[in-house]
Image (cartoon, rainbow, N blue to C red; front, side, top):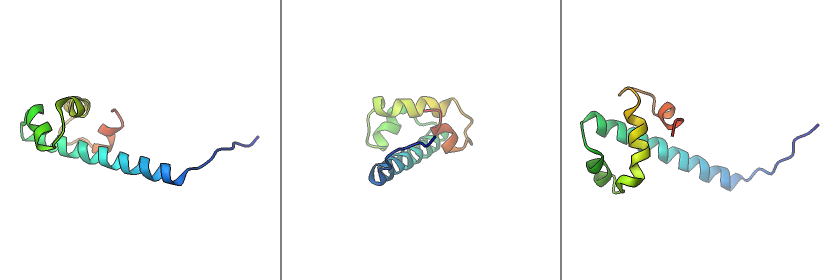
Length: 76
């Protein structure tokens, strides 16, 4: 039995970049939460909306401050 699939290199690179940006965003949110910044302040500083940052913010809040950003990202 063989598994056939079509590998789309451009799509994979795009997905990898998106994942990298999300992990970087987790790191930024972790740092800002550690400085006791509100979600509104974080959204403003990251030039995004509260609605866009909320899933990351809520997930980061459920982990210890020194949690690995990749582990946090895996729970988004």
